[in-house]
Image (tube, rainbow, N blue to C red; front, side, top):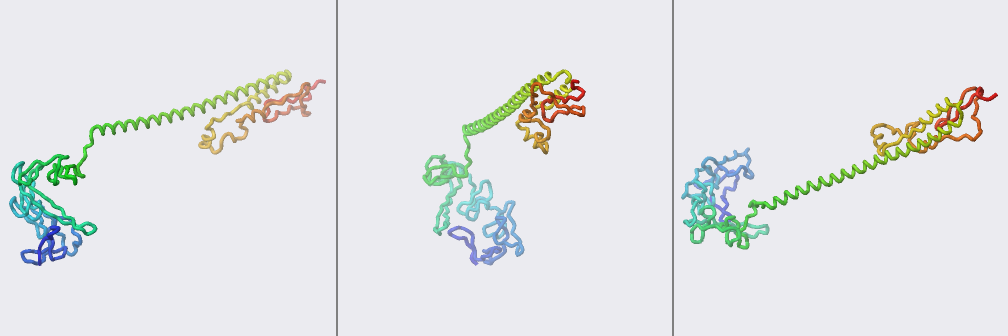
Length: 346
């Protein structure tokens, strides 16, 4: 059995070729894995073999998943870039040796240079160089193996570690990385607040204008309604005055009949006006508008039809031989009473 890591990708690989097994270097045999660094491994079936445990409490799981081991003290051996295998505050694994990332500014430092090879969609190899050191935050290990001060944004650089932002652009300038939180300036917050206030005021202004427009339309409807009502009332009063003059000319012996006809005229001279929204409201509240009820007097034509006919001068009313007065015609404003035979002169 061969137990090794791929020299190009530095990924652990062995000849067992089984998701459940690892290469035991002590015996050069394949054994079941005893630990894992993740909660999922592709192709693992728990019905065939139980899922390996996660390492906790001062232990770590090596790359071969052989089993949990104790953390390595500074200066001890660790696997490639496995910082989690080292003990201490801010541990780091450099050149397969555990260190603490706490070398001060101007102090001696250690570098770990690792080159990775990856392949793009067309199959071309891409090489990437990663340089790590044990200098404290804000410094980096220079070519003289001394910790130097990292550069601020806008200064020249050749590697990401030379920048405080840990991002060196392709133009060789320190910049903020794409995952860095961008602080919004105060003036932009002020502009945003003013824009929100102006938007609210504009909405309120538009609503106020619409309300005024609707109120104006309602007032116009009300004014038109009462204006039409006054016009019809004046017309009815003129009709009533003409009927009164005609009744006075018929003689005193017809006073009782004239009074009845006058009351009849008053009833038939009633004018019913419909509000502009009458048909809409009546359709909601009743099954049939009142304007369709029999006997309703809500039009000018009805008022005109009720105008009494004037008798020719010197003519006499029709006489009923039965001795009773004929009642007035329906729809007439007024009618002369019929005289009985007892009222005729001898």
